[in-house]
Image 1: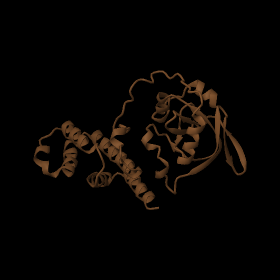
Image 2: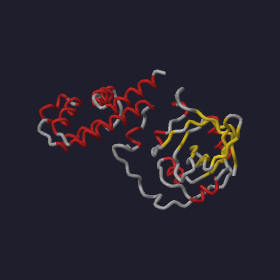
Image 3: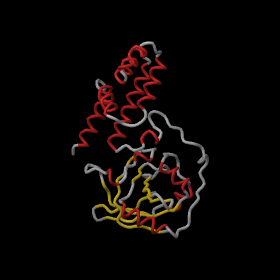
Image 4: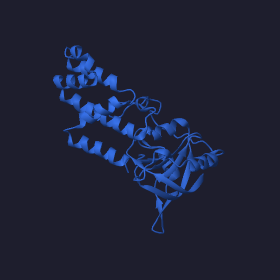
Length: 248
């Protein structure tokens, strides 16, 4: 197995969907970038790579054994050994992982393009590890708080984050079961359909509203999100955070 030295990392913690692990060009100045002194590189099948990239499920025991204490971080002139930190590649994509000592891929990061190329070159002639993972072939279930990647396709970092905030607000709206409220928000989205919306039951109105907003991201999505988060302190904080980060 091979190692790569001096790797710049931007950890995204607790992400179960690969689209939330931002590519290098989306890194922000306020992100906490770390330098890893030396990291082990593991070549995997594409199925295992996708499993790690798009899940927070337990990693194969053999993989954990293979990478145990094989990577190091340098802090304050000290070289610290990391239990389960490693870089995986399927020969096409590259991902850094740190379990923080657990058995799940808690932190994940993309790499700088130059270092991705280095990893791909190092792994070119390496053996492909086909670790056993139970139920790996079962399709992953997505829901409103863990959207299908197709709903995030083509969006930049801020748009993805605001869209997820909009979905959180829609999920909260669904939990109220308030037919008048869901009709109100559907009318805000589609004012020309006011009369027909007023005839809809709760489930029909919410389902049609969600189906209309779930694809893409436009100024109409932005303004609906802005209005829906008002009056909800948690959502308002997330909204303000996104705008504070975007202007730094």
